[in-house]
Image 1 (spheres, rainbow, N blue to C red):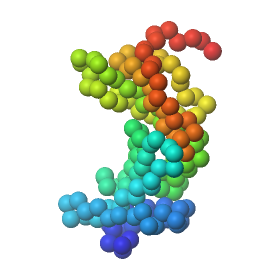
Image 2: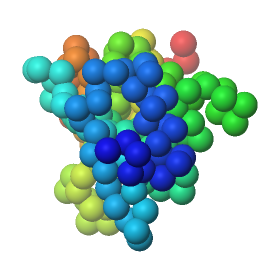
Image 3: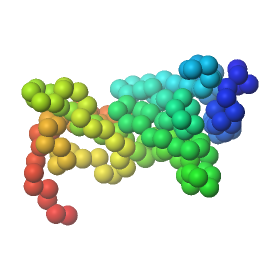
Length: 164
């Protein structure tokens, strides 16, 4: 199956399997405009609310890593001159729960469509418990790979962030 991929995709998936050989069974080939790209989706950790972890080479010779409402783009899977950390660092930080995904949710506003207003990966020590960021958001959703930090709670905007 790997041989059917475009050269860039083939190299990137081989690099990924060098680090995670157990993921070979999750490989699928996606064809777009006659070109073959890879897509790997790893099921969430049992008990976790988010998932899957998605890794693909589908767009513009870059690697996209997605989890919950967050996605990052990389030039390579492994560290390289173009990509000092490579996608592998972000993947490992998610799997180790060094990072969690914080999503700011909006509902009930006439101007903003209900759903995720913004989502980003943050170090677990910096997971917010109050919404100081987005005026239109009224709730926070936290997701982590193993579910350790999973949480959903109302979080209306607070304009005055305390100094630490």
